[in-house]
Image (cartoon, one colour):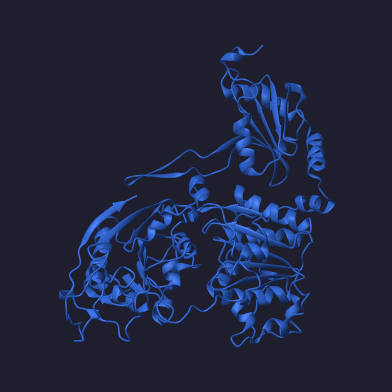
Length: 603
């Protein structure tokens, strides 16, 4: 006789007295987890307060194999009907990619089977046994012996690696499963900061362990990405990894490794030497992973296409944060529809990525500035008379006071929040990045006096700046604090501590914009990074309003797989094209054009 009547029991009591005994009677207790945390809980920004919502938790999860959940049970107290929790259970099951969802109120169970679309209710003592449910799953989903073998493969785990998050697990399981079914072109879309390399590592580890794949090539397009992957996520495989070096590697000895890393530029060579032909037979690799396969132009794309065409017998996985879709370049055409997508929006909702606020700053010359009649620049040259706008400043004309105002706005913001907050300032070009660096140095001389690396320009041609990149990215190194850059940091380099992103360059493409925003989305709560701020001087953040911001990927209907490169535009300025930049950019001195900030909005 229980201590209290059933209808007065709490949900916890109902679980303890009724649901748990009914499930453990049929299932091995080692294959059940309770109160399983699924997400970290979204971070909300209320002014300067940061509040995390409660994480999503599942009452019961049942497993087929380690890291291979198969069903979820949602419990309610006895004042609800048996199936009251079923829709919530179904929502979690869909999120976790599970075939079965159950709910219970302690009187019996309700079941939704995603493989058949059917629902039923049954008594408390009729919960399916482990063998029954697994048999149903195999039958209804038509599992092949290869898929079954692949599913039994465990993930890599150790003291230092965390188990995959739910979306990583889905990405890994779906990929391994598709390869076991014989699919040979796959696309995974995962937002920046959600652990693409870790996911790739677990896929590679399981495919090697199961013997499904033996020789694997991991292609990236930047050295830092390759080194980061080898040292961090792929470290457990260090005995079998090799970084390809075309000048040193010998075709006769290079074949002894299992996981090869390379830059695709290096494998192709500058003059189209196609080094990959000299080093490897076409059937050498049985799996190729292309990291950030959306990169660059049609020209770049044709470079890694050369490699993929040569090793076409290999299974090929494209991984990207932003699938590129234009008339000339289509990942979807090459790799097929994404096997799984985890978007930036979902990452922020689940609390795995940092939320952000946007400060939009308008200057009084944002909409246009026209020089006075016959006005001269600093070199005494007449400034061509036309209306200059945001897309001209720093590109076609340099207005010194504008740079000064942008720099003082950045400084004011840092002074009012945290002067040691890692900041990236995206400028129009390397020259603008240098001018911005100087302006920021002079406005923050007190900080620069303590450490000259408080502000550093980090651009492609700046050797000093490039030597500071690792320190800027580092979680523990305090300096440099502010990096001014043009393109170098927009992709790939993993800046975990960035708290302020300043946009002072024109960005035309959604892909590039997402990449830049992705520089701030990594969370480091222990070190005090819970969110970030985007300060926008060129009204670039209007791109947030674009439905593509994180909506579905759409095929470009004009994409023509047989067309190689974009056609050259006709000569002569077309409509809406300002006349080309003069040979020497006019530089307008401080007193030649005074700039004021007239408007700020925070969203």
